[in-house]
Image (cartoon, rainbow, N blue to C red; front, top):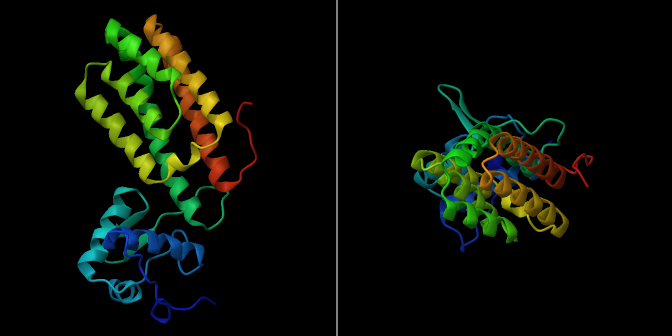
Length: 235
């Protein structure tokens, strides 16, 4: 049996903002089996005692968790941690990856059509810039820049903003942590180059299919890296 929240004390690191430290602390409680995915969180009073913070700081942390899709509030019932990804254990990574899957699903719906519009509306300078960006993928930041540049080529600022916000949310959910494998980066770089080439020649069918496959593969890579799933990604 796990100890009650009142019986534990979680010291918060001084290097983080208080609410950010509480966000990490709540998710770490999954690792120590104090909270199960899908389970209601302890009360505000209990958590404020556990972390030694005010309820105002605690509510800031709740807001961040809700924004990231990791927490839902049921009126009259309480706050619930989201369920873990299918087939995964009850870990922090499994909860975060479940939210990353939602983000990638939404990105696929949007970015496939963004690629189609980019083929029709991109300027010559934008086509050259995309080609250059695709060649230099070495980090999460480069990946973000490329996807936002494709969206910018639609000449629709709302689409660019949506793509950027969703990609940044993925980063907050630690998707960025899965960009350290050189082999995966090389594969992703080739995919970016193929997408950029299709946009450059205005091949909308190829651009949309390549974008769809790219995001589907990203989902598989993230699941495998975070949850230790059997590899089914392309070599």
